[in-house]
Image (cartoon, rainbow, N blue to C red; front, top):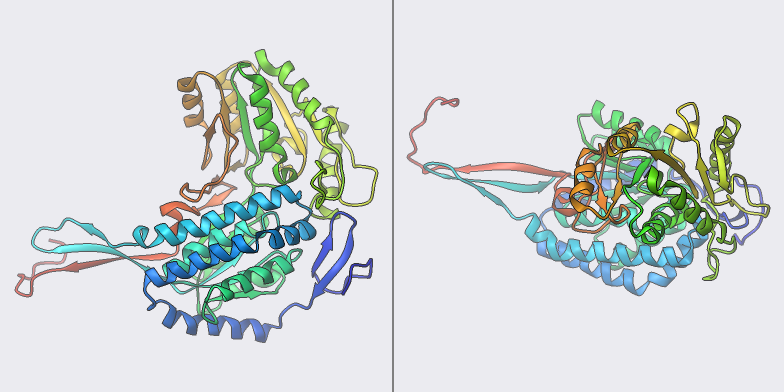
Length: 474
């Protein structure tokens, strides 16, 4: 259906967050259709696992080329569905294509047998695929999240049931078409148009061998429990409240530029966004002033317009939640140096906001702020900075900025998180592992580590035919 403000009848729908208009909706798949898809994926696995790893990698390489060819089309679709600035959408397409190319180029080598020393014989660890893997992916990076899950698993030889976010169904279908056009056999990559409440049941199906979810703590708890009850492997990448530690005022303009990039990419709707700025006293006042100045000049508009610098959040619901978190902090004594409210215009817009004076009594102290809101804390020492950085239920990423690299590394090593970047905002590259600890989840994606999360790392020992048989435990 064309864009309108019609009543929404399905939970799976494209709603343009720029104007909150319904664009298109899709009926959820029936339980019978989902079960059939799972059976077909299991059947496809029996042949897909026997395709050589080099051929599977070549297919993923073709998907990378198609993604480059369709990059602008996909970028426009992502911007329509979740409101991302068009420049950010294009950057997502570039990173996603590089991830697929990395999987194609490096995957066969990463999955090669690993030989082990053994007196009197030989031993190797082989990386066999597990089978059907369920992937539940979020709306904030509708292409990147898919490829970092699908690329390694397709090269490995697993088959995929992909449940995308309910507000990005057209992006989900576009990715299914992309892999099909790259030559993926039927049943190897299947998109499921289902609601989040259906995921646990799919994970529990007998033919499913693992589950990967990127999303909320609530979703991760549910999927992790469902996988655990069925004795299936799971990988969870959940929320984050990443610290951004500033040790000194050296090169402050560069540091503030990095803080803006780390906080405002995707309008702050990223698990590894720099959400908590922790600044040593000597640089605090200048840092806050400079950050507020940069926030103040952002202007709302159509995210498909390259001149727009402030995009909407992904939905009206998301904007309302963030607004409530900010109002809670302000009501309890925090100060908004800039912003603090909604933008007075249609759409899911929130003012760019810098909060100071946030204390443990406020939601903004411990909850993840998913949007253009930065909390800035003042500390007097490295020890205090580390203590504050670690005073969070999350542990995904983090960043440390300072001109003394030895000091910065020392602070970084003490931060409890899965990733820490020094003098650069937390980011993502195909060859680097991505994941966290605590309520941010477990397991890793990308890199050689991520490639093997859903592999059966099987030991194969070969001994001469006349080897004396001894007690199994020696």
